[in-house]
Length: 490
Image (cartoon, rainbow, N blue to C red; front, top):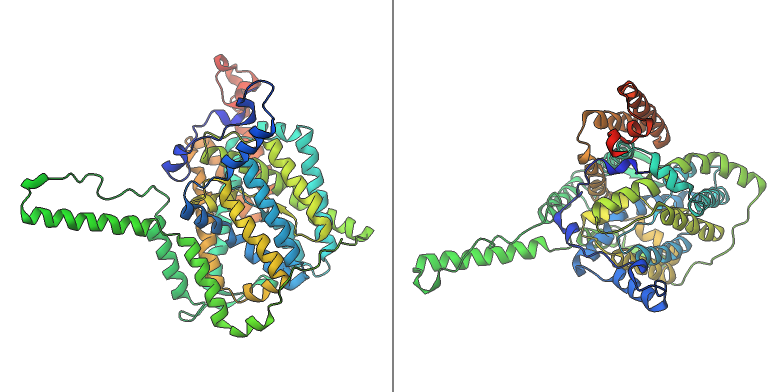
C-alpha cells in the first residue's frame, strides 16, 4: 500500500545545497553476499562522517543548543540531574547517530518529562529515569516489531506538518520570551523585562540576531556577486578597470562574510561573557568526570514515572521524534532513505541504556534537525563533532560545567532557538491544497493552545477523517479516499 506522504510534492526546506549532497551508499547497494561486510560498513561510516564544509558543520553543531542547554541546565540546578553523566552519554549518542545516519540527527532531552520534573518538586531523578526507560522500551518494541511503520504509513502528511508547525512556533515563542524577559531557568519562570544594555541585554541579543540574518539570510544559498562579471580584456578603459577591481573586492568580502560560522561565533561570545559576568566561576570549576552510579528505583518511582512521565511523553516522541523527524529528514536530504523503524529503535536503545545511570532521557527532534540544517549542518560529522565536545566536557569538567552555563546569556540562547523554530515551522510550505492547510492549522492551533501535541494530533486526525468521509459518495474505494488517490492509481 502506498503511503499517505506520496501525494504531496516534496519541497526542500532551506536551500538548494541539500540537492547537491551525494547520497551515501547503503549496504544494500553492494555486491551480493557482501552487503554487510566489515569493509562496506567501515566505508559507510567514513562517508557518513565526512564534512561537507568544515565551517558549515561546526556552525551547524550549534543549532541545537538553544533547546539542549536550557533544559539540561534547569534540571541540573533544580533536580540535581548529573550533568557530567548526561554529557558523556549524549555525546556518545551523537557520535553513534552521526555515524549511522550520515545527517545531523539531533539528540535532545525529552521535553514532556523535563516539563513534568520542573513543575513537580516530588518528580525527582528516579522518576525521570523510570519515565525514560519506559518510553524507550515502548519505542524499541514498536520499532523491532514493525508497528511504527504502520503508524508512519497511516498518519497523513498534513497532520505531521501541523505538529511540526506547532513545535516550530512553540520554539519561536519561547525564544522571544528568552530574549525579552529575564529568566529563572531552574523554576522555568520569567522575572521581568530584560534591560536594554548589559552583558545579557536586549541590544546584545538584537545585534547577534541581525548578525546571523546578514550571514545566513533566510536559508537561501549565497552566491558570489561576481557570477555575472566578465573580463573586459586589455581594451578596458581605466575607469572600467577600476570598477572591475572594486567589484572583485566586494565579491571577496561578501564571500568571506557569508562563510562565517555565525552560530558558533555567537556561542563562543556567550561563553566569554559567562566568565566576564562572574569571573569567580573559575574557582568553582573542578576537573574530572562526575561519578556514574546506577539509579536506585522504588515501586513508587516506577508508578509515577509511568503515569506522569511516560504517558504524556509517548505521543510526543512517536510524532516529533520519529514520524516528523523521518519526514523532515527525507525533505532536507532527498537522496537519503530514512526508516521510522531505525529511528524508533535508536531512540529506544538510548534510553534503555543511559537512563539506568542517570543520563537525561533523550530522543531525536525535528526542531533540532531543522536548527542544525539551518546553520550549515549537512553530514553526520556535524553531530559527531558536537558529541566529541560533549564527551570531552563531561570527562574533563563533569557537573561543574553547570556553574559556567548558569552565567551564559539567556538572550543569546533565545536567538539560536528562534532560528531553529522558524526553520522547523517553514516545513509547512508544501501544503498546497486548502483542505490540507485547514487540517494542518487545526492541528497546530490545538497543539499550541492545549500545550499538547497528542491533543493536536487527535483533533487533526478527526478533522482529516471527516473531510475524507465527505468524498465517500464519489464511488471511490476507501483506500483511495484515505490516500487522496484516484481509482486508477489504486
